[in-house]
Length: 218
Image 1 (cartoon, rainbow, N blue to C red):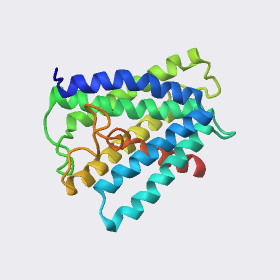
Image 2 (cartoon, rainbow, N blue to C red):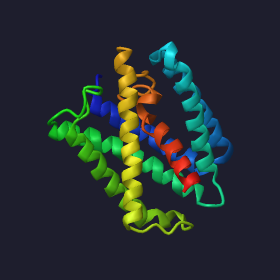
Image 3 (tube, rainbow, N blue to C red):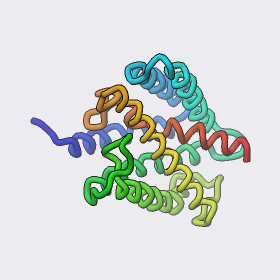
Image 4 (cartoon, helix red, strand yellow):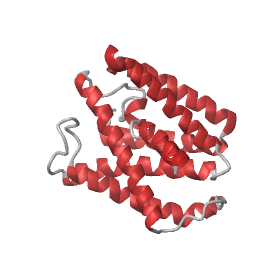
């Protein structure tokens, strides 16, 4: 039985997301093993789409990105690590979902030649979904006893959502650029309907280091 792309994406997400959320919640050893596994898969895919000139820069960036993800999840004295990691993870996911859904429904003008599937309506959808699920995160995060950060719907939080969603979308476009110049559609085929691991975490690998450095500086 053949499934269309949307059905494949839905089935894959329904199967994988509960597992990933479980690993994120467990943290520690299991999370670090999972993160290491994702790093080597990402590195393998990066080798396929990169050229010699910028391969080393991508390697260094990937390593730094995964280190930042680990540092954020494992936490510091400044914030609840699980809560912050979940917030970033959820906004990145629904930035991607919003872009896909709005792009398919409303179509419209293309955003850039670098990534021909990206549309202006998709950008609007990315921000819309990230806001909706960011607000839901505020409303319901206390149900899982994540109370160390008193999030509220204020200007600071709105800017944070815009920051995360924007960096995620830029990361998506940059990976699309590398795929385009390498003449490939997906970085891999490990996730049915989604492609490779880099296809799914392209935004996150830019958000985690950006967020970590921003938090470190300010």
